[in-house]
Every structure is written in structure tokens, then in C-alpha cells.
Length: 427
Image 1: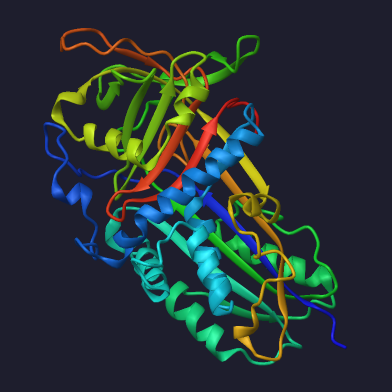
Image 2 (image 1 turned 135 degrees about the vertical axis):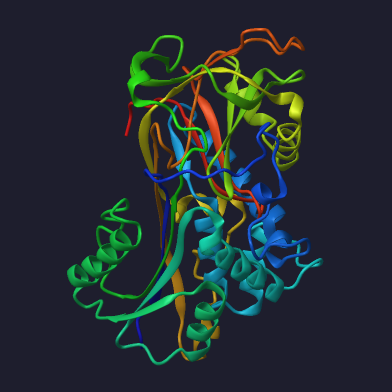
């Protein structure tokens, strides 16, 4: 009798920014033009746009679950990295499990086929890799297979064609060597930002799937380092920490104070095909804003923040920080409907009829850094003035309390990063 073979899914999500040379993207008056919104290769009806609503729905469902289980903790993850890895994993599943995985990811399979979903991810990942996007975005996957497994040509061909996965043969009998190989690959592919993703592997592990995203971009309007000073950040009613607070007081930004919800929303653009949406609840109103955080609300805010009226001079105080998050997705995803994925009912025999593969563990690790030149994700909490119609009014926005951050690929309408900054001093 053969022991059960295990398919271990490891997800490494990362967003990082570092210095470089900005270039003009918008008209002189600040209004966004078509080149700001459209990257090469993305047109109306493109495959990547078809999967965008499902990806956003999954991202927010996962965020709500994480926030409910740790309401006072920082949150940072890459929903795109997780979705792509799970969709890639579904290629190894039988038809029943593949449909369940894709439906739990938010895709309506009565409106699109499984192949439509995989083509959507294929186009999305190819678009993010385009050199003309103005960003350095590196998205990839790697499949580590035991040397004892038989050839799996269909799986290898499909994962390479749709997800650009790399293949490595290794011996899992030496768990120390396998862990080192995987960790070194992930660390290299994420420019050293994700380290020690895997701490140990069981002796009966047969394959490891790793997915990662590296995002490097610059603010279109960088902050001056000389103007960064220590300021208070109010974690809660009883906790205040000191953070390096950046300042801009002469620049125009897209922002609004919501007339119907107790929050302010700021849009910060990168020099390429991406933007950050920073959502700052009024003091004590984080939970209320989280309850209305839906795909429709994100669409409403992004639509409003394309109107010239909301492009105004702003005194902006914004924290400089670095946080990270690690998650055991095999304990989280079943609460979102992935009931069979990590159970004995899972059937991954499409890779080879003679094999019984089971997904045992799933890890996701993300880092989020923000400084004067760019971001690895953004977070902000502060105080804002009430929205009025007078252009001469002095507007001030302090991100000095917990806030939400969403980083979008503008052209593909995909959420690359999602998080909440509760305590910017906590790594």
C-alpha cells in the first residue's frame, strides 16, 4: 500500500517599492488621461477583465474573515497571489473539485467556463509582466516535484501555459534540503523580501506549489525625506505610538470626504499602471466602514476619484512604515467555502490516474513597506476635514489612526494588495 502523497500549496505575496525615476502620466491639470488608465495589451473584453469581479469579490471576502478573527491586528496579503495559486492548483483536480475551487474563488461558471478563468489569469499575469506598464512587477509560480513521482506532462504543460510555472525536481526525503531549495528560490524571486517561507516539510510530501508577486513602483508625487518628522499615531483610545510621519502641503491629490459614510478616501497614483486607494475611517468607525467594504463601494470611490472636482490641494500627513503578515490558509479557506480542498475528499488524480494527491497545508506570507519614494502597500490613518465645496478652504488629512489600503492594477482592475494598518510600528 502506498502512503498518501501530499500536495503542499505555498503562497508568497509581496508588494515592494524602491527608488527610480518618475515620468509624467497625466495631463498638466492632473486629470487622468487614457494612457494613465490603459496598459498595453488590455482592451475592453480582455480575458483579464472578465475575471476581475470574481477576484475582487474573493479578496474582500477573505479580508472580512481575517478582520473578524483579528480585529486589532495589522492585515496584509496579496489576493492575486492567493487566487492565482488556487486556480493553478485546480488544474490538478478532477472536474468536481476544479469547479468547486473556481466557484469558491468567486467565478460564476454558468457565465464563464473553467478555461475562460485560466485564460483570464494567463492574460492578467502576462499584462503585469509587460515592460511598458511603468512598473516592475514580477509574478510567478514554481512547482517542486518529488524525484519519485511519475511524469505529469498535462499538469506541467497547463501550469506553464497559463501561469508560467517553473518546474524543479527535488528529493523530499531530505526535508532540510527541500526546505532550503524552496526558501532560496522564493527569496531570490522576491528580491530577498520573503525569507523562510517554509520552516519544515513532512517526510511524505510529494510536491510543493509556490506562488509569489513582487511589485515595485514609485509615487507619482514623492514625499521629501527632509520633511518627515516623528508624530503620534493613535492605535486605539488607550494606545499612542510614535511614527515617522511624511508631509506634503503644496501638492494636489484626488481625495474626498464621503457624504454618506464616516470616512475619507485618498487616491495616490504610481508612475505606472497602478494606484493606491487609502480609506481612512473617522475615529472609532473602522468596523462600520469594514461592513460596507464591497466591490460596489470600491467601484463607487474609484469612479468619484476620477472627477476633476475631487482633485484639490491638500496638506497630507502620511506614516512611513513596514509591516508583514503570515497566514495558514488551510485553516482559513474552509471558512470561505473551500470545504473539500484540504480534506480527504479532495481528488487531484487528474495529474495521473494512479496517484492520490491531497492538499495538506497552505501558507501565505506578505510584506508591506511604505516610504517617501513609494510603497509595498500603503496604509494610513488620520484626521480629515469635512468635505465642502469651497476651493480656497485649507484641507488637512492626517493618517494618524488605523486605515485601509487597496492597491490596484489600473488597467486590469485587479486588486494586487489589500490590508489594514492598525499599528505601523508592529512589523
